[in-house]
Image (cartoon, rainbow, N blue to C red):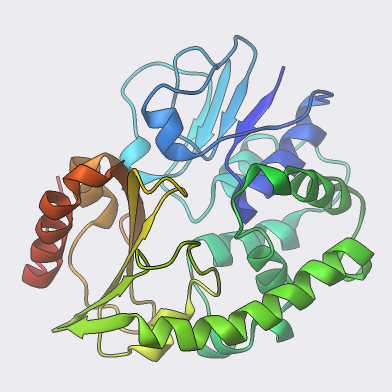
Length: 298
């Protein structure tokens, strides 16, 4: 039995809960949503998928993304909710020896971007927000750190987790990274009517930093678009779209829109990844939909 989840804060917390609830011994299988959508993940019978699209080969599935809804029968739980971890917590609420209510409450806030302006501008003042930002680098080399976080969050309260030497170093790196990222973001973002467009395709390595910062830097925008190459080979392009959490006037269901472009997500945020040859077709279409800002609910 394995946990199959994605490397973000919600995915880490999903793994924390599933290890406790199911007494799992095997290491987490970390995968990207796009790989799951494309059927590139080797899912086994007995696997528990969390915070990812459904795969019929799994034994349990837990998720909360609008576009991952399924009419197929499955074991587990699905609910359009602030976090997948919250769905798991509710499902197994009688199995936990520790009180994870604070962890779930903070995970809900972070994954749904329900943050204050101060939390966005000064994440170093907010323990969970800062910790979540240490999981932004989604490379296989970071698996050891993700697994360490799972172990720490299972055993300790947040203050002790932040006292861990490796976590301390990661947090210091994030604070430095965020300062640099602000300038890079401003230089590579343009405002087109009510849409902010950040294009990082000119970089050999995609800049990483505070994903919420764009909302405070471009308050006129109701929605943000970030474009970058998925890998060093530059054969795939990723587009991330998010409603501005401080200017909530975007009418477009982002996840539903991006499901037309090989992606998906929530109503207010999502992403898609596609071959670079499709960029000149897909990106203008996405921008056109966002500029029209019309409701697209199914």
